[in-house]
Length: 402
Image (tube, rainbow, N blue to C red; front, side):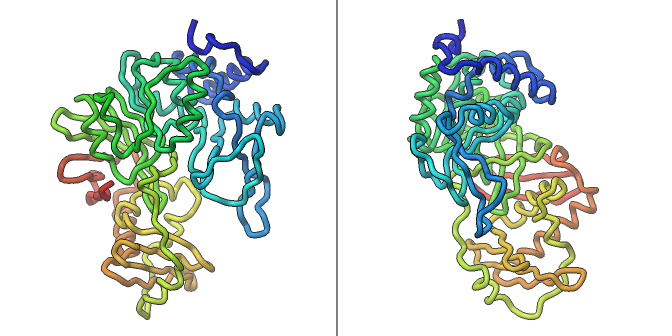
């Protein structure tokens, strides 16, 4: 008998829903491993998400997303349909916990915790090459559903999961223990890993970092693997699977796809104030842009990877569009740039120690010259001298320190 069998399922009909979800994931090619499929069929996801938010079909009068609370009490069928679909379920905004016995509609806000869509959860465990007998560190317990899948597949003994939010971890722990899973849980910042249970064979992060934290390399066994998402203040993302060498270095290729994760809270972007005040500092006249900002701002697959490369060139920059004008703002160096539509192109104004758009243009030009290679053509090298993203036909890009 596995832990999922040790307690009777409190809600009838969910076993069939789990099996249907697993079958759907398998049909989509997201669940090829029999061991992970069995875990999906057995772990009751509804135990880990008593309440969550789904976006309404229309925005409010101010253009903000309207987030509707969904619980069993508000509509069991809708709740279970969402729980057992391949959907990310937002459970927290702006670090504030909601009383799911008395939830309210939200307008806007920044999601700070969620239950990741199941296809991505199992994909992460599979991409990290997690196998029986491995000791695993999961960064970002969240609701605990991903942790439960790992425990179901590997057993609880070798699984450690850490979460920076104590209330989140308390809720996840309650759900995990109620289902019979007993992983090692701790309130800890993923930036520093978790020394008490090191060394680990695998480290998998369900949040993103601006660069690979040095502590994770130090807490990995030689030959161990680290799977995490790199991100930054331009909201460019790339997943990387690193193999850790015995000398404290690591390297690995970026993985294909367009996956994004919430940033580790210590790596969240700082406030930058009023963009127009920054623009007022910039000198006149401007110049014609060599590349359109839409190459990194468009909500398309084509813009996803170039945005990450551009971010590597200006790691402290943030972007905002106000009245059709694109603003780049770097609160660290005091640099800024604007791009304004001008005829068939864009006009650039730049000021401060760094020419922000000029740096991005250099990266985009090199990217084009190299034939616009995909993420998997890039390798990340990590050592005591820094972290470098490399491609055979492009200059190396250095990631900012965490």
